[in-house]
Length: 255
Image: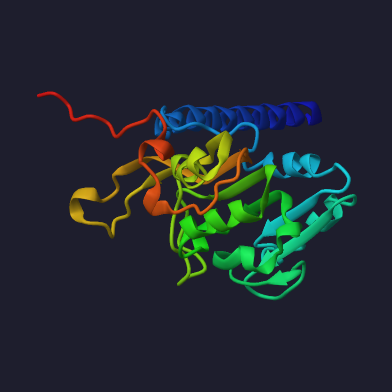
């Protein structure tokens, strides 16, 4: 009797587990339909991998490393301990734990002398909160050494947060434009992470209600290297072709 009960329970659990697996696999296959085949997924510095990549990059002795947006907001930061042989500087708009320099990132270069440039600059979940990210890009270029590495992670499709200072969402291409060859950067990787399955709510306009939304990704990442110094950079002097490369806006369909 006991063996029969155990077998029945095992059979039930096995069938239940297989059903869950089938549903999970089915959902995964269905979710693939929401991906944009033209949108690159980050590999080298995806959301799950970027920290280990930066920590390894900064493991060499004697480097100067700047984290923009270093204040502990979502939990303790161990960034400083991850660079034991380097000089780590935490920069933030507000004072707090893990912050060394308090200031406005739009004036970043004013807080450091010419002799205090950095080998690595990185920032995560901050660019969406910068009112003028194109200014921030030029300020970052000023304080990064030629040959220095830059990593930026921000959001492409994400819920409204930390308002009213939630200004922008960025695609991979947007980050490549901000840190282009015109500003002296070479892009190593730019991509997206963590696809989202979305739909319009029942509160949307009637013709959109419950309609699916594809091509959503939570994070966007950029990894680049500063390859040259650009003196007196001015966005007004930048040609469109120098920031979009060989790409162009999709041509109209021929009727």
